[in-house]
Amino acid sequence: MADRAGVSIATVSRALRDSELVAAATRKHVQRVAEELRFRPSRAGRALAEGQHAANGIVFPDLSGPYYAEVVLGYEEVVAELGRSVLILATQGRANAADLVHELAGRVDGMVIMGRTVADSTVARIADTGLPLVLLARPPVGLVDTVTADNEDSARTITAHLIGHGYRRFEFLGDPNQSPDVAGRHAGFVAALADGGLDVPAKPVRCAFDVKAGYAAARETLRRRTRPEALVCANDEVALGALRAAEDLGLAVPGDLALTGWDDIMAADYARLTTVHQSMRELGATAARWLDERISGASPGVRREVLPTRLVIRTSCGPHDN
Image 1 (cartoon, rainbow, N blue to C red):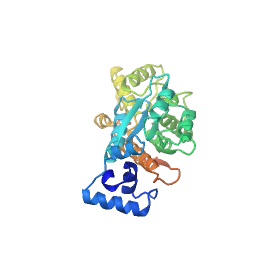
Image 2 (cartoon, helix red, strand yellow):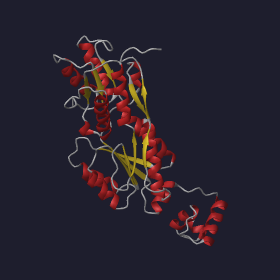
Image 3 (cartoon, rainbow, N blue to C red):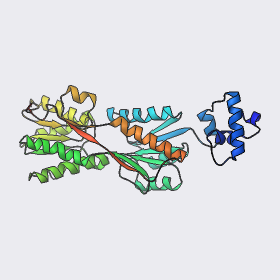
């Protein structure tokens, strides 16, 4: 194609994208030759010609569990439609996470950084290089685009729902220090208890965000002399572990204990778990679309978006009037 048109490969690529970096007459000439040859450019080939990688990066705290799987699916579906590949990095347990993220930044055309994977200073340094970035499920850093889901308001709503059932002794299961999302949920939990004039636990019951950790944290909490009446869990996996712990201790849910989760994964429906639904795939898809716009230079100014969530009422918090 480039030989036939008498121009470089890079010029062909720019001309077919109607770039103003190529003179109008040259653009028309290249486009006419492309029509004659029925030429369809390869995304990977175009990226190579322009010194790009045809790959996006995404940095996760972890890859285990349904939440991350859904976010990855949403992200990958959009990226695949755009003809790009995905390089994924999970930072959990890696002491040199910042170095690994910097290394990934040199291998991709843009990158999504999710959650509390690296410090804000690392994000800022990468942004200063000019690499397109989007932050996912973490607070904004500088002028980097950020997409999150509503956490605090929904946590207030689900906790107020439990208060409305008459529960008065609460505990929050999950570690706010390990996730900006969970920090928001805990803040909403505390605010709702304060609004209701109830005692606020001195600290959350800190645990990881999986079934095993939820089981261990709930079992210890529920064996106290004065046990809580309701457990507000950081996510559905923690809640499912807590449900199993309650059953092993001979406690009925509901009846002896109320439970709520977060995310609305498939298992939450089977367990009849009251929870908060968030569109995990849309989180990933939005981040992928925004990143592509940044890479192509088509994006507007700095964007901050909070995707809506909604309360899903089932039976784990008690009976409801029809």
